[in-house]
Image (cartoon, rainbow, N blue to C red):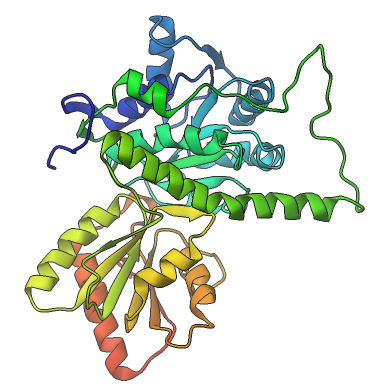
Length: 398
């Protein structure tokens, strides 16, 4: 991997989990609620060292469960503190009850989600089944492909969450082990520049013993629908503000991000759609297939919630085929979660492409570039036969 560009320190070789914790330090988080679970543990371990050494002036709360971790974050954020936590897989499921509370209360918590397969059977390796289980929790959700992106997105997550026009919690997704435990060259923004980019957290509504307010009151039938609709509208309205933060970050640090990112899509007849760290492997496959004369390209979803509808449609315009790659299943339904949403999104398009769905890399199974080459060849074969709505699991041992 070549060293990332942009303003900041000289590239430092560092484990991505540790680098993300350093980004939390740069953001000057004030409360860290931590419960260990593989593969996110190195993040909160390093944060505990930073707090113990006096490098991060924060309250470190070692809680008894992930549900307690999010409860602590909710309380801290409601009291006006910049908060952070991290989790994976079963920990996320235990935490899920409180995720929906954090979003409806409009609390700007930031959480790193180190993606890991949901049990059972028990599996500690990477896929996206954990984050797909809470896709409707009302949080802004972004995906990192590299260690540099994990660092940058963590800093930007606080700017997004605390934007007065957003005031929503943010999840930064990064693939477990295949990204979180790799050592990569990282350029860290200078602390003074981060402080300028990310002003101190201020909220217009917080818990104060001198001015008591109520948080999380009962919402009966006469108000529940309106409350949920208000959250939905707030999440939808956050999309342009996410891109604004990306743009401001580019101006400050020289690294550009988009809600939907493309790779060699010019003139592409077939476009792969991916999320997360496998996108780099897919790009290598695209390079090789382009050299062999195939008209192929890649679209990567950086923003997952709110879904970037217009940006995605523009990115795939003109393609004959979309091959959507999922790293999670919908049990009892013949399509993956990302493909299901994209198919619904494209249904009313006048010139909608033929869509296929391929599920791969479950439970940490290796995803070599030959898998992507197979997908492209398979799409060509299916196109020749005129078959629609194809769903296939790649690399399955029959």
